[in-house]
Amino acid sequence: MTNLIEGLNEQMNFEISSAYIYAAMASYCKSKGMEGFAHFMDFQAKEELGHAMDFYKFIFLLNSVPEYEAIAKPATEYGTFSELFKQALEHEKEVTRRIRALYQKATEEKNYEILEFLGGYIKEQVEEENTFRGIVEKMERLGESWTGLYHYDAELGRRA
Picture 1 (cartoon, rainbow, N blue to C red):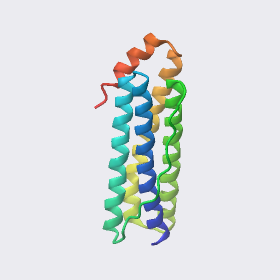
Picture 2 (picture 1 turned 135 degrees about the horizontal axis):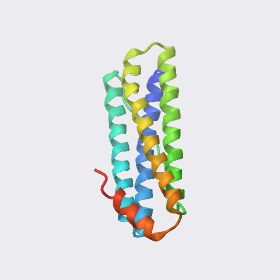
Picture 3 (picture 1 turned 180 degrees about the vertical axis):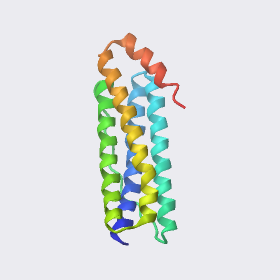
Picture 4 (picture 1 turned 90 degrees about the vertical axis):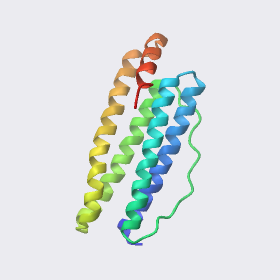
């Protein structure tokens, strides 16, 4: 495997791990009676699995074979809902950092196919970080007001 293919493979596994983390966050929210937050995180987990499959298919298109890694057990406790969404934002920042590093490698190697593929993920990460940044801002304004949290839970539960 070339370094770039290895990087794509690592990212595929990181996307699977991301799905696992978001699924654990969904479980945490559901266990606290916040069905809307759980729905939001379930949706996020499915999206991350979709990204992993995109990398999987692309690796095959490059005439290579994806390799799966062991996935670490995610946390089971996330603190307040504000803290949970802050952790999700930080996780998305890590995804962005990794995608940019891969993009930089592909640029250096003038691998236009991989650049084209990753370009969509650069845009995707701008949107992901913006979404989570907005949620964190709203959560900070709500504080731990259960009335506000229940209203926002209902709003995030409408994500489709």
